[in-house]
Image (tube, rainbow, N blue to C red; front, top):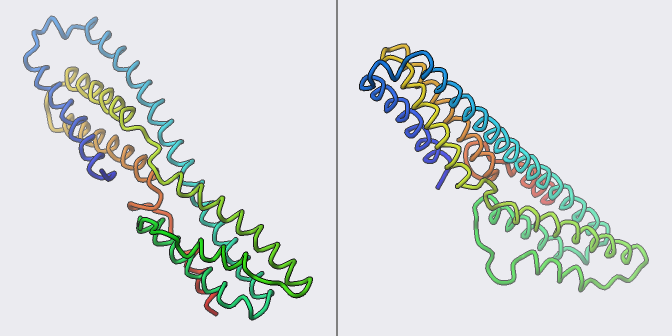
Length: 245
């Protein structure tokens, strides 16, 4: 499920809790809403609110860390591709077919990462690696170029493995469910402690929207290649454009 439906569900749950609280307020006898009772409810709401803030902060930090790490991987992969293309161009005209396979492997990587295209059999990346291994250097310069290319390929493969490994969501849905439950209870408390009027409804609505927005932010950052804030493929596209020159 994408981040928008989950954030919408969270909004409905949280604002629904406020509505339930206001309904309960109208039906509770006055003695249940005296000063001491309100103080206890406020203390419990404060405790739950503190725990919710801590969990939400940890979720945002985790999602943001994953997002920044993936951005760094994209930049590193783009730099490695350009470095490989430079090394192979220095190798000589014998590497023309190998450079074309490199270009195809970059296109395939973009399709797999941003368009979630599943790999099928031996792809361009495997063919490119085999082509580099099959190069037969005739001079010291070519032997050095092949050795450098193989080293960069190793680094590139490690980066791609890390990118693929981190494509899965890192935010636990049970943790998110517990967080929404806590927020639901907090808004129920808000509703119980207040009387129904336009100002209260507007304030609770803004609060529920803010909570839903925070949850949307967490989930969208946790899916760095999808959603509204997805990482751009521009660095790899730029590398492709330079390789075609």
